Image (cartoon, rainbow, N blue to C red; front, top):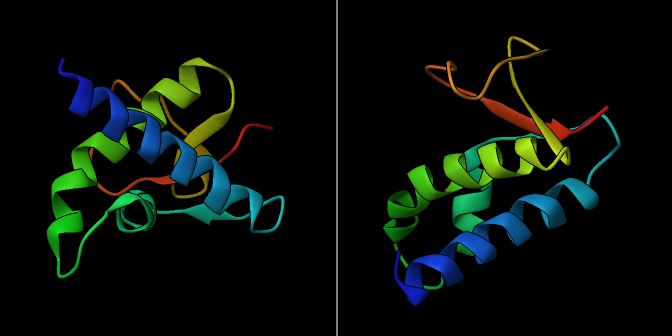
Length: 90
């Protein structure tokens, strides 16, 4: 992993935590919200940050800071497929 990749990872993790902090205690966000917030450019280049955002969410789950949900229920990040939401750990 390059320094640039590590910086991107940290930026996306911060974006997830800041977005959740700015919302209500039970609010959720989409990984695309974090990708858009972390993207430093114009246009739709944020799309390249979608997988980094999902990876960041998985790291934050491992750290006990967030949960990944589907249909409002926590799911195992290793097996989640399809659309996910991120919320503060309960």
